[in-house]
Length: 315
Image (cartoon, rainbow, N blue to C red; front, top):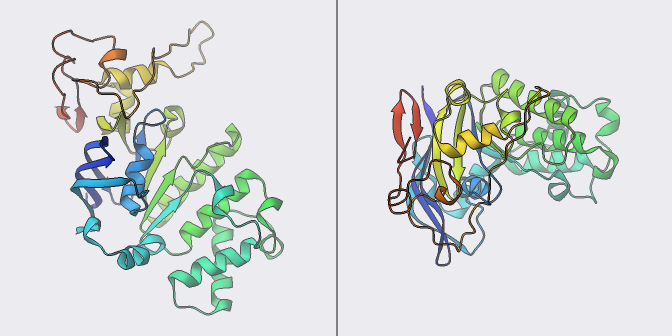
């Protein structure tokens, strides 16, 4: 299967503190790859590295980000501006901060389309209506003249997805696309993204902390902890037999329909970027911790079984 994007040995710092450690990631064309983990583990900063939309304080010190074989870290900013939207589109987690409250949805869609393609205003308007129809927004001729505040949260997220679809981008990066939406709307949004992936053969990088949500949609999973990828596997392998202690703890903490099931939690909290933890970053919270090993050696991601990779010294 052809890889549309490949991250190789990516290291990123904020000042003197390292945030990403030798990140390696492969996204196969037409598949959904989920990057999961607790808040602050480095998921969104990995996505922003791909888009080259990092804060000024962030610095990539080594590695490659290959999109269709070309290293994006070697692109000039003018080249990245052409790539963003046209080839790689971002679906952000908060549509309220992504939509301008002073302009109608139609105006914003038309502007987005014309920025990325050489079409007339009328052509862009037709395209805007087409993508609104794709994301199942009803009464398009009327709703296209609405302002963002006139839409519900779920409808605003559909509009953001419509903007991502308007330019036929090959790769969609969905950063927590269901944040602050109720469970029913979450499913509708994920069904929509999944439908787009299948119908238009789009590749999706899904950033999420919700394992229960992604389990129904994703093809591959990479688990992040404190700037490291600690496990990677096809989704069916991962949910059947999670290997890393952190992955096992995440799955064990999911709610169950069993009335006698007692919810398990992961003790402690992920380390702050300033904390200097020797050895495995997860060892202070790990039930399989071995003194003299886990607190001294840095585990690396290794293939433990076919297509299943884990970074653990004891399992």
